[in-house]
Structures are given as C-alpha cells and as structure tokens.
Length: 225
Ligand code: DX5
Ligand code: ZN
Image (cartoon, rainbow, N blue to C red; front, side, top):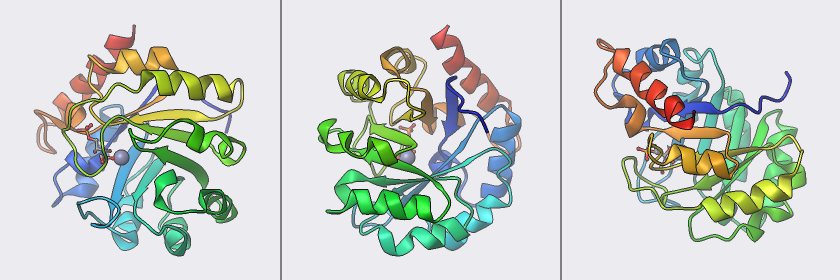
C-alpha cells in the first residue's frame, strides 16, 4: 500500500453507543470514515476504563477500513501480541507509558503492525525525536487522555516541530482531542494528516439515523478547504 499523505478522519468509537459497536462502526464507515480509532484505557495510565483485546477483536469483524488502536495503558509490552491477534492495523503506545518506548515500537513492528508513538500535552516533542526511525505515526494529544468531549489544547508548535523533523519520511502525524471544524484547520496547517474526532463526528446521529455522522465529517473536511 502506498503512503497516503491526504487528510484522513478517524472517528473515535469512544463516542459511539457502547451497546452497539458493530453497527456503529459500519454506520460511520458508510458515512465516509477513513480509519476507525479505538481507545483502550486501563484505569491506571488514565483515569478511565474501556475495553481490552477480546472486545477489540470483535470490533475487527466490522472494520473494513483501517483499525487504529490507541493504547492508554501502562505497561504496554505484555499486551502487544494480544492486540496483533485482535487485528490492529496500527498500534499506538504512549511515550510516557514506560522507560523503554524504543523497545515497545520494535515489538509492535515485530508483531506485524504499524507502530505509533503518542505524547501527552505536557510532554515535549524531543521525547519522540529518537523514536522517529521506528515510527509509522506520531500521535500528538490535544487533550489530556482519558475522556472524550474535552476542550482542545493548542499544540500546533509541537506539530510543526515534529513535521519538520519527519521531513519526507513516511510518518503520519495524528491529532487526538477536541478536533472540530474550528480546530482541524490549525493542526492540518501545522502538518497533521490524521484527525481523530469523537464527539464532533458522533453528535446528533445514531445507528438509526447515521446521516449526521456524514454531515459532521464533511464539516471537518470543508473547514480545511
Ligand atoms: C481521549 C481519546 C480520544 C477521544 C477524543 O483520551 O484518546 O480519542 O475519544 O474525543 P473528542 O474528539 O470528543 O475530544
Ligand atoms: Zn484516542
């Protein structure tokens, strides 16, 4: 597959109906989602708890696009094979999750997945610089992870710095947290190409009435024009 530099929208199913993930994934893909973003939280690295490998494996049956799994867990390494088995296309770990993020990225790639490295708003860009040769994606958090629906924190200077270091290498920059038609143009202009959006995509719609999902994604795309 050739590297896609265009802007991609990755709805976070954290904002979907938790009793109906399969149909929510189908609905948001039918409405134009490029990737499906899956937020794994452990109640330890972040103050919230979501789902683990068996649930993610069940989601896989419904994802036709690209399953992007964001691990907000610590430690990470013991679970990498379980997420490979669950069918993750991209597995992203936080640089703050342990002392050996380089080893973690090596293990994710060895397990056959694309490897992402995430940084919290309080973590400087420098923390990921030496990891870029192993990374397929850098996830710049624009909220403190743990919950959907939080206010965007401006990290455009960090995005610009990392984009500059990446140069023409095939590494995505993903933004996660508070992405809306108001904030998306700021981060795309700074060099991001994958936009995670939870509340801004799922608001106003449902499995029974999925058209708002498409309208919400088109509003984000239109803001970039
Ligand atoms: C936050 C998660 C996000 C979250 C984004 O910890 O990593 O993916 O779902 O939600 P919104 O788009 O509502 O800020
Ligand atoms: Zn996320």
